[in-house]
Image (cartoon, rainbow, N blue to C red):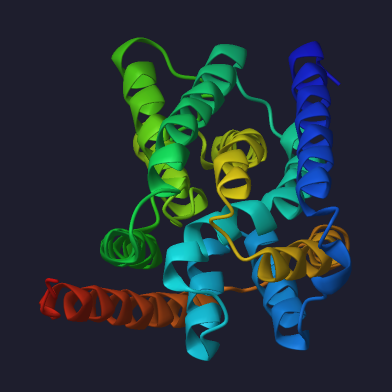
Length: 292
């Protein structure tokens, strides 16, 4: 294993271990009363299984939660980041050493995503319900557009293993924005894959970049949500405890599936969820303000 990749995986393990210790300490007094419901286990298993195969987990998880009103809208971003952290780290560990990426491109784009999440998480953790509903609804529409674009004409990208000059600058800026969007509940995988392809990189390059980015930024972005208790701990545990074995099954046993029809279904449910969030935000803004 090349030294940079070996170092990256070691750092991911250290970061993930630190996250586990921090989260356990935050929950130690209430852990016994936080048993996830069967539906929360089911959501974790399904969403992380398909996330490992490239579908993404944030949009599908949001849709499944809102269908049953499992998690309050204002707690969705934090719960997504906290609950999907360990399954994402496991994905990164399985896949990140299988694709050759130029070191400067890999490390700078991962660093940019981390910086974006560190900037965004403290802000989002304090946002009121209406602003989170509106932001998440609009961002999901953008994500849906990316998925549909890829369905009709998925760009194959080029053969390059790294970026330089202004293309590297664009990639760094793009991943910074995607890292910030992660904190409001928008997955990084699909837009990162599209961006990497449009910049002329081999499409496979997206996998170590996007998985490495999420494996680092999600533990760090989760800290403000945990500290401010701006998430649903029971639902997050459901994602983690069911998601980890689901990732293993998808990565080791399934390998790959024909996901074209699944992606169309995901696009449809994203549109439905986005519209419902925007309508909810509109209803909140139309309520009269009562004055003492």
